[in-house]
Amino acid sequence: MKFDTKAIHGGQKPEETTGAVMPPVFLTSTFAQSSPGTHKGYAYARGTNPTRTALEKSFTALENGTHGFAFSSGMAAIDCVLRLLKPGDEIIAGDDLYGGTYRMFTQLFQKYGLIFSFVDMDLVSNISEKITEKTKLVWLETPTNPLMKIADIKAISSAIKTKNTDIIIAVDNTFATPYLQQPLNLGADIVMHSATKYLGGHSDLIMGALIVKDAKLAEDLYFIQFAAGAIASPMDSFLALRGIKTLHVRMQRHCENGKQIADFLSNHIKVDRVYYPGLKSHSSYEIAKKQMKDFGGMVSFQLKDNSKTATFKFLENTKLFTLAESLGGVESLVNHPVTMSHGSIPEEKRLKIGITNSLVRLSVGIEDIADLIEDLDQALHF
Ligand code: P1T
Image (cartoon, rainbow, N blue to C red; front, side, top):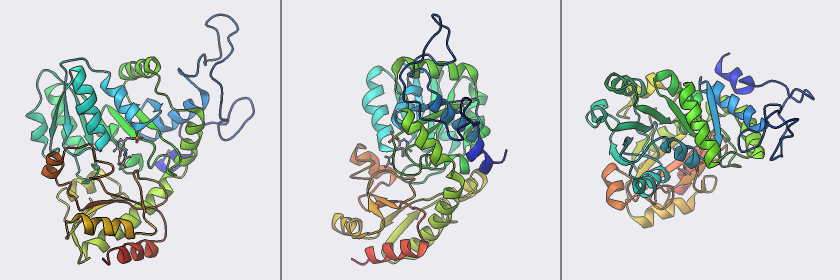
């Protein structure tokens, strides 16, 4: 199946007893057993629920994996991956990450003896140099949140695997979605999503996803998910599956609009720098072009006036772009990383990589592009 067909049919079939085309929302916590341990494949809904199973099959199909897991949030999915490790294990992560991921790594798991180093993933050698016999996991986002940096998944994966095939490579694919890139095809072991974003697509749920292509890894992750319990609910599973059915169509428009907004901002007198992998000026444009089908709907930019007053004026001025955390819904959102999505990163760390006070992140929605540009244009008159 081609991707657009998979978005609708991947892993899906009409429900067995009624023929319902969409899976019913199985609002049940438990399932009858005819004799102890004898049941119809479902025992207790923390372990499996048919609505969640339907969604997990869709995740698996979209990312070309063999097993998929739906979690109660993106953070719960990341937490599950880290629980594969033990005290003393080392993790190499990108230096630009969603603020919550950075917070989980440094304020939660560091406490339990995991050792993190953060490197610029632009250069494969930055990662190779950090690998020791204790390295167990490489964690990357591409494009990164919020600076839109690109990591070459294929080059990184092959460099790591030639050193040690046991190192797990995990890619947070939230910004790209499987429509734009499929990390398992490029050598990664685990794909993670905040399904809250583009997969759900309508800003009406919080959810995480993991997809793998190795049976042993799947077994380990399933054990952790079942034992720790951070599962997606049946209702959210239904909503996410409904969202996924239009992923490819939404993404086409997100990409078209994203490109036009990036061009508009690049030529605006009040704008200092635009971060968008589809711009030829982006330092990893060639890698993005090779790795991604298109460039997505996330655009960050820095205002020339770096003052808090100017930045807040712009953020308060937009009318169609709603000032809110999150991204990936049909509606356009604007976010101020320093005070919102990346507030948990210490000032000197964020300034070092370029998350300045005047950095603004846009999640470009699928509205009419003329209205979106007009909104940004009027908001930039301050
Ligand atoms: O919010 P949650 O579903 O738990 O997902 C966390 C997460 C993980 N990875 C990436 C790349 C993310 O962007 C997020 C969530 N991000 C935001 C809420 C935000 O505004 O950036």
